[in-house]
Image 1 (cartoon, rainbow, N blue to C red):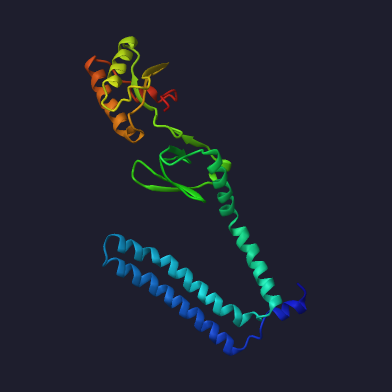
Image 2: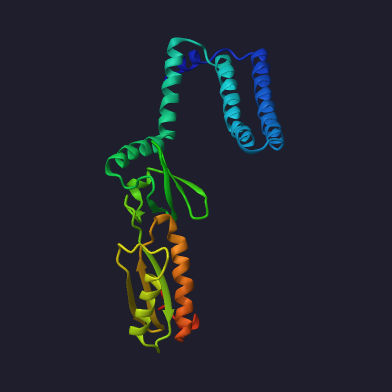
Length: 272
C-alpha cells in the first residue's frame, strides 16, 4: 500500500476524537472489571446449575464488551469507505485465518475421525498420557472422562501427530493386566496356577474371554502378569483392585517373597 492510500485509510485525528476514543477504552475497561467482579459475587449466592451458568457468562460478556469497543473505535480512526473496509476485512481475515489454522486442522481431522473411527463413544482411549472413556465426539474435539472423573477435551488435531491407544476399540471387551513381582526362589508353576485361580474366581471376570498368566525372568526376580477381561469395561478398576488384593493375599499365604525395591535399583527393574 503506497503513502497516498495509507493516508486515505485513516481519518484526521483531532483532540475530540482522541477524547472519545479514550472514553470508549475507559468505559470498556470499567465494564470488563465490573463483570469480573460482580458476576463471581452473584454466582457465590446461587446454587447448582444457576451458579455455573452465571460463571460461564463472564468470558462471553468480556468478549462482547471488547467487540463493542472495537466496533466503536474503528470508525473513529478509519475512514469508512468501501475500499478501506475491503482492505481492513482482508487483513482481518488473513490474521484470523492464521490464528485459527489449528482449529481448521482439527475440524478436518474430525471429518477423518468420523470416517476412520479411531474412537467411538464408550471407547477407553489414551492420548498424550490422558486415559479415559469417550463421552462426546464433536466437530473439533473429543471429550473423555478420566478415572478421577475429570473431563479432558482433546482436539482431533492429535490424529495427525500423536498416538491414540484404544483399549476396547468399539467392543465390549477390555483387557486388564495386573502385575506381581516376586523374588526368584519360588515354584513358578504353582504361582502361575494360583494366579489363574485368583482370576477365575473374580466376580468381575468375563468368562467368555480367555484368562492367561504370563511371566518373564529378570535378574531381580520374576514378573507375573494376569491378563483377563472384566464383564463391563467400566468395571476395569474394580476388577484390577480385586485381582491385586486377592492375588497378594494368596501369594502371601504360600508363602513367597516379593521382589525388593533395592534389588531392582540397578536399572533392570520391572516396567509396566
